[in-house]
Amino acid sequence: MRLLAALTLLLASASVHAAAPAPADAGSIQRVRADVEFLASDGLEGRDTGSRGYAIAADYVASQFRAIGLEPAGEKGGWFQQVPFRRASFARPPVMSIVIGGQRVSLEQGKDVSLRPSVTDKVLRQDAGFVFVGYGLKDGRYRFDDYRGLNLKGKIAVALEGTPAGLPSEIEAHLNASKAIMAAEAGAVGFIEIPRKSGPNGFRRAGRPLIDWVDSSGRAGSTPPGLKLRLGLSDELAARLFEGAPRSLAAIRSDAKAGGKAGPRGFALRPTLSVDAETKWEDFTSPEVVGMLKGSDPRLAAEHVVLMGHLDHLGMKPDAKPGEDAVYNGALDNAAGVATMLEAARLFAAQPVRPKRSVLFIANTGEERGLLGADYYASHPTVPASSIVGLVDLDMPLLLYPFTDVTAFGAEHSTVGTIVAQAGASMGISVSPDPMPEEAIFTRSDHYQFVRRGVPAVLLMTGHANGGKDIWNGWLSKIYHSPKDDLSQEINWDAGARYAQLNYRIARAMADAPVRPMWLQGDYFGDLFDPKGPRAPAQPAP
Ligand SMILES: [Zn+2]
Image 1 (cartoon, rainbow, N blue to C red):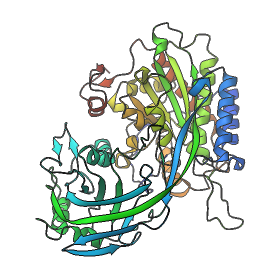
Image 2 (cartoon, rainbow, N blue to C red; image 1 turned 180 degrees about the vertical axis):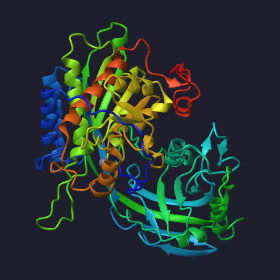
Image 3 (spheres, rainbow, N blue to C red; image 1 turned 90 degrees about the horizontal axis):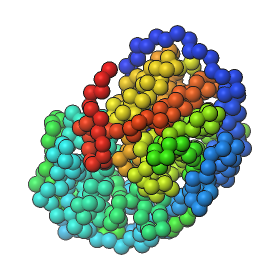
Image 4 (cartoon, rainbow, N blue to C red; image 1 turned 60 degrees about the vertical axis):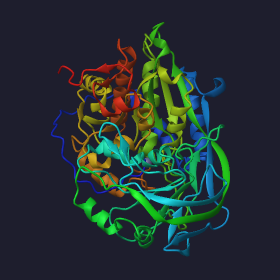
């Protein structure tokens, strides 16, 4: 799971009381345990994207895919799809200045501004003016068009953080995540987001290398075409940007604080920025691991159902003191997801009849660095993009208690939700609503990269019933993304085997259903990303 915003969560409790779940198959328990123990071992050094430890983990997954009887479905007939990553950092401190009120003021990286190194432009020599664009949103459903009447050609878009009040949390998160793309589409060469509240800007990331994928045509994952400058401003400089403008930043902020369904109107700003920066690049690869179980139905086998989980984690702690545990083992985040995916593949392979549709099993790289491996695969799939009909992402199942419910983030958008509910019911496992909507988890894990390409998808996690709520809260505040997410935790291996069984049943139901998963009628994400696809009634019969 990519970094969560708030680690102390006040959660609505799911009021589900189930009997103790039936014990899982003994062999399955041992196989899940064996895979987690290997993938989370110190020897793999935290499986950082591009590291030797990750490469060993990827070899292991490929070897298990072979043993299970899957077919290689990566590039060139192999198990891997090598993702071309680039690490960018500045070759020298960038030279920047701004003209405000006719005076040129030089700017210091990390103090006045935080300029991001570029993975697409080695040399950045740019003079550009600024345009305030309100919240910087463009959206048909909600009739947002903050760029209307503004000329962004060659300009830097300056957006206020956030969205108008009252949006569903997942749509709000999607819009927040799409602002730079919207700025680029409007013709901007740069994008700045200004915090809603006045305060010190940490610039903790200033000067840190940036990792992204860059494909053979020069297209990058998180750099929209044409957008050369991504930067943050100190609070003082942000306020000065509005000198001589129709409204001050303080006035705009105070209106935003009052709320309302309309955002602030945009206008051109007077200052101009000058940037002279040079980046250096280090290119490397790290693989997606892809295996396929071919479907048995002559017609439906051309369609693919995807079960996936991220194999990478955070690597080694660079500033560890002697004797300190320096390995981010990522036992639950996400060796547990990959291990249960492997066991689900074994359960498929053990059945006398293969599924009707083909099933793809993918171990993703680069998740912790920004959902990068899944993004690359989704935009460069090794099967026809239109053949991917539904997806389940397994990220961070907390296998620490006998779970009796699961949360399927995204379940309310498509028929995948119904499929998950039915598969769960067959094992006495219920599906609970998102217990932490403010975290917008739907847009924060790998499955979102497929949602953006129109694929109905859910992210599955163990739920909050049967003691899960307290365990989740404790784990998120003490263990998450720390070296303590290791094998010293009291992992409930029985829960691991049951989770694998559940994932098998979900993927099997998707693969065997007479119709492919569908977005629900009128769903925001379906209408936005798959406007011409088939639809299911919004209120399926109970
Ligand atoms: Zn994580």
